[in-house]
Image (cartoon, rainbow, N blue to C red; front, side):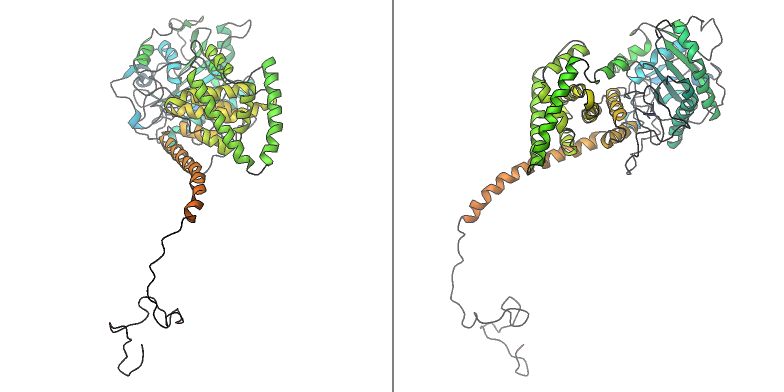
Length: 544
């Protein structure tokens, strides 16, 4: 299972609640813990099921909650949790997991004020709130959200693509429940209850009700898995084809068999709170991933041919003396020129139209040289310095464009530009987009260390500023190193200029032949004189 945002020790992708969307509540009592110094073994997924799982999407979990409640999965029997759950609308922009929930910081310093709360009291409001605290509309996903405290404050969450193989559902349900609940326990904030969302659009010939009936066993298994850990599922919703169904409410008066229509986008209390807080829903998960997928068709074939030619020319250059350093310089110079070009031409319109304009700004040959050059770790780390300020947006567009150029057999080469895209998104406080990009990178190479570290840092709710500071220092050091050869080239001329000679004075007689060293040394303190230049004799007449 390839988790999208990585929890500290589990399969899911942990997202802290404070920084999520307006609906996610802060967990001020739980400040995020820094990642352990030991390198992550594998992306967030450390618990493995008894049989292999191939979910359609990665998992993503957030911080957990408070003391566990009863294991009763009833629909509205716990008014303290469901009848009055609070969503915080004043938090930072929702962090997004590439395939999962937004990574919200659990740090109290980033938590919104207590007066910026939105209270959700019905399944309809819960269904409407989902994209706002994820930062996108989940596609083909199971989302589990932890509730904390007596008022049902939203906290940790986990997201995973719904496995197409129904035989995997029991193992997936157990892992998701354990991931979300254990993440809270690690922060001494065990969930009091959980809300489950199953989101999937109908296949050809299906209706939304058919999807609800088909996913019912999965929903029941999730409720059982949570109940086995003494945490009740207060609500389980199926969202499909513009409607939602409740798996927990048996009353057809409020939850009819044909489903309840979703509210119009932008017309709910949650939408107003999100707009007031400056948050946005970035579209669907599929749309966000589409911006990072490689080319297909004729253009992909042409790009692959150019990549083959560039790779063949790169090997002899690398074998030359100082060839690696030259390739690094050329790659960074080309990347800087491309960022300047992208900065001079800012497209407009839909995401698809803007991506098409960006693709037209870079040739196949330029893309090939950059893609191959970024496979070098040193070059990639230097490229990460384009992370903020006026260069962040064009750099992000360039990394996305390069990821789309990794066609055919070069699909795995997209890991470097995808990771750089995730880093820029995180650095510019776009958590949802960062998680999407990093999840795509880890799906191609689960052992890519840079993506793993960024994934964990976002998942832990850490601040990117320390890493930005390190990269700024790296940039300054690199700039100083490039100036060194220039200064050293002038050094010989300085050495050739004659230094002023010491003023010659009368040499003392016998000084030239006098030995130097511990005995008879002519340095200061080697002997004592009487002020007239003569040695003083001891009491017995001997020399000292």
